[in-house]
Length: 122
Image (tube, rainbow, N blue to C red):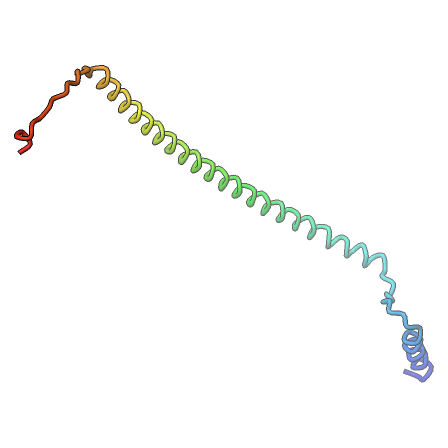
């Protein structure tokens, strides 16, 4: 490397620092390299999108199964609760019915006053 080339490199570096620019200056990319990059990136992006779609579908199916299981479980508890409430109401209705039958079959007895003497109490 001769002195002129060193001067150019040093001049460019010092010019970059003196201007205070923080921008990154890119070297120009050839169109062939740019198209080659696109040709490689497009299949990769498509594969990643398909993998993402697969995992999203699997997650959605798993969530649907969990929701269905929980819905069936709550339905089962509600059914059991309603059956127990029905049985409790049936028992109450039967006991009320039995009581009413007993009350209907009861006879009214006349009350009489009896006087006891002191001798009866001993």
